Length: 437
Image 1 (cartoon, rainbow, N blue to C red):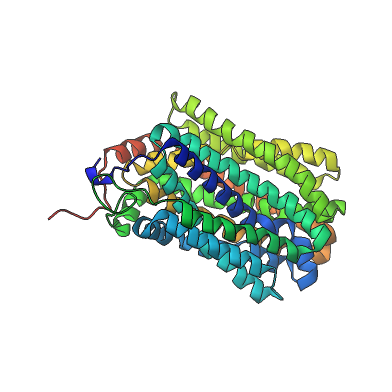
Image 2 (image 1 turned 90 degrees about the horizontal axis):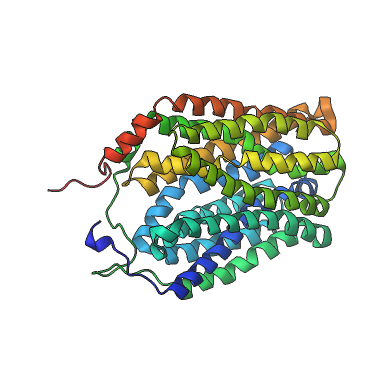
């Protein structure tokens, strides 16, 4: 490690304070981006939107900006300062969340959702970079796990809180109340989180070296298992994100429940199941990886393939208690891929390309999965509505879920080259660094 890359350690109490603040930012992040999922039905009725238009708002309207701007935002955070960028983008997405409540038609809501995507594009890179700045490798995994748990908490609060606020005050109030705390958090980040100082020099944060993106893309393209992993997860995520966005609306239509009722019941299932899944997936991956480097890909295959029959039963039965029991099992199994996939990306990146490889990976998954999943599901529901009525959305979700099987086939194909690609990643230097004179 170069001398100018070392970060002066912070006092333990201050590092803990930073973790608490970043945890609250993560709650706000996932709350604001997922709030629309529990409000699909009231928004659709009030603004007279089609399922396809709702799919655009919850999918590509958010995902395009969020995905494309992720890499430039990460580089901006490295250049200008992680806390400074995080506080600024948090203020942006919070204001846009509030403005979402003021929208009057599809066009204005699309602009508001794009604005949320612009802000949140800088949230994850800056948060993870600050965690790396303030916590040693020995504690970094636990700190990142805490951030992940806060994200799951934010998602569950969006379902529960957004649904209840809608029942009491309407969907617009849910966006107002959801966005305002983020403004206070932005001030907290900007004025109380210090930019870590580089040991032996001025400035903040590691890595002032410019990255040659063309060389990075060329290197990663040469690692076949990285390409197959990214493409497979992008395709599988079409079904995964389609389910995530449309399941609350499906429950409301099928069982004729309010947003508050669905939010309360569904969040009570999703939160504990997500927490179990996050820890279980990571633990199983670490245990089996010692035996064979292909196990992470086998875990991904198992997770997505088994999700399909469980999801089909969930969408085709008409028994709410049984559906919630299936949702519990499906959420646990369906989330096992998270830890192994992130670990695989890091292993295939090698020591020099970790951050940029993760950003490219997430860009692909979000553009394809989050961008297409909700829209394709909604558009297919519209196409089937005249023939199937209320069952159109259920059948649409069943069809879109099949993309998980396609993704599983990609993961199996990646097992053929994973060992050689990981070995190559560890042997390579930094292809993105500028050449010495």
